[in-house]
Image 1 (cartoon, one colour):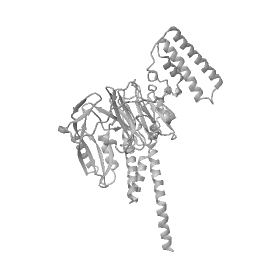
Image 2 (cartoon, one colour):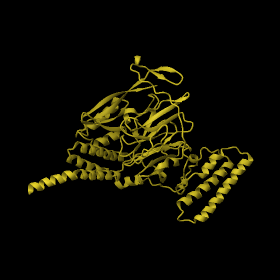
Image 3 (cartoon, one colour):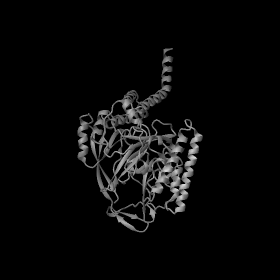
Image 4 (tube, helix red, strand yellow):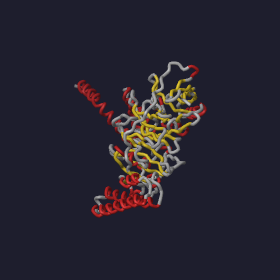
Length: 503
């Protein structure tokens, strides 16, 4: 009887183990998403010590790294000034960004043929652009990468990835250039982060003619949820990004923050403070001047200012009816709206009869756009989506078997010229963790105090290693190695990497 009971218990335990493991994994994810990173680390380490299954270990190692990253990032928190936030449908949230209308082109399209791909809803093509950055799935792996194409003579260059092997096994979405074109912002689900999509920035190196290693923008721009589409307004006033933290799966929040050119970072270790910061609640209800972001294309004159004021009234009335229909006299508000529209139409007739020359259609669209968020002082006005487009590309460069004197033939639409690639030496830090599985919290904190470069985990012949890079000099790497030895991480080495860049 005892033998039967023991066998039955063994069978029952074996059958329930996967279920218990999934529940434990969900618990760890819940702790991490509740910003209790220390609790998630403790649970992950407990599960790692209790299992010998290789697949289970890999899963728990991945969860542990996310929790450790989250805990490390809380040492360098930002406290941005939040102007406004609004919850919008995922399907067209990008149309509410204060950007020119007709620049967001829904998928599928020529650049991104995917019919629907989760968060990636559209491709941004600036007006009169001579360069386009976009995200699209790789035809072989299916991972989404960032591609770049530039207008040359009469054709667009064949799209090429800008990060190559750095982001080979992760997805990158919503690339967006800063107003000066020197910084590229994007979201990734596979670089150093605390889970989901985090927001990263990369700066253009004019000397090397390449983009720098992406750097996580930190908490609270990045969170355990999906954070994406970071955008600095051209007027230098605001930074805007989207996130699905605290929303349903078909919605996102858009956050508007005051632009800060020199942000101050601080350590926050209280969970309730982290949750409060992650909520990004607006701190002011005063009127915010975002007219330059919303109407930068409209000519400034007394007549058009009057029209714009009347258009603003129309938008405000529409917004009030839309948002507060259960709290107001809708019939009275609709009458006021109709009167305002008639006044707007009279102004249009006056413009036409007096011969004032301007793009009336732009103002008409401005007055008809859906608006939300006026109660916060920052108006989110819905733009028109872009239509179908067609770009003519150059043929991709043929792969040559030999390149005498280390040169390659580059073919453009009008001429052929010989180009000699530039070779640049970069340095990486390679760490083989002392416990064979993961870096300790003290090691991660040490690394983060000395660099913001990404920490990438990989395996070589079954041995877990961590790669931190890239650095411009070996001395930078050696300084980190010296500090890590004090934390017990003695298996560190410097890896030299040669990068080839076309001029």
